[in-house]
Length: 227
Image (cartoon, rainbow, N blue to C red; front, side, top):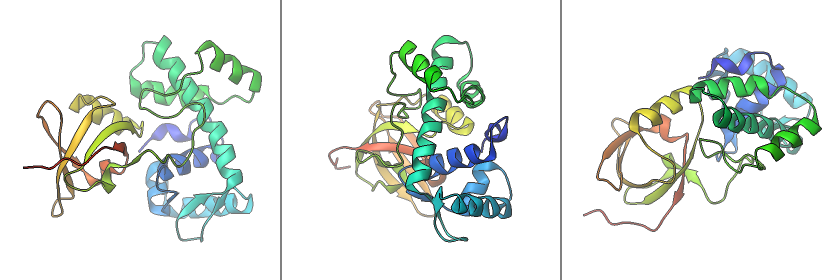
C-alpha cells in the first residue's frame, strides 16, 4: 500500500512497522499480505522474515503467518511510538495533507535519542491518539476493547474508533466524510460481492469491502434489531 515504508529507514524497522500494522488485532500477518503492504515480492518477505526469526524478533513457520515475538513487539512499540508522536506533531503544527503527515512522520521518526523522544512527548502534552485513532503512548498489537469491522455480524451496532492510517484509507475516509467515534449499524454482509452494508446515525448507507473492513477497528455496542 505505502511506498514511503522504505525511504531512509532500515529494512528491519520497515518490516517491524509493517508486521505491527498488518497484525493489529489479528496477531499475525500472512507472507502475501506483508509483501503487499511493503510492495515487494513474496520471496523478498520470506527471505527477510527468516532473518528476523534468526534475530529473535518474529515467530512462525517459514511459509506461514508471521508473528512478532516478545522482543519484536518491544522494538516495534518503540518504533511506533516515535512514528505516531511525529504524526501528531506534523498534523498539529504543519499545513500538510494527512497522507503527507504519514509519509513525513515516518522519515522524521528516524532518530535514536531518548531525550528527544521525551522532549517531543512533553511538548505535545503526551498525546493519546493520532488522527486515525491509533494509540501513541503504548502501541500494542491487541486491544481488548476493539474488534475488526470485518468480524462484525449483521444487526450489530459498533462505534468507529480507529483505522489503519495508510494513504488509501485516508482518502477513503475523506471521501465518505466519516469521523471517528461515529456509531454504525451493520445492516448486512453481501457474500457474493464481499461487501458490508452500513448505516450511519444520519441515515446514510455505506458500502465497505471486506478488504477495507479488515483495517477498520470498532468498539462493539449493544445489539440493534433491524426491522
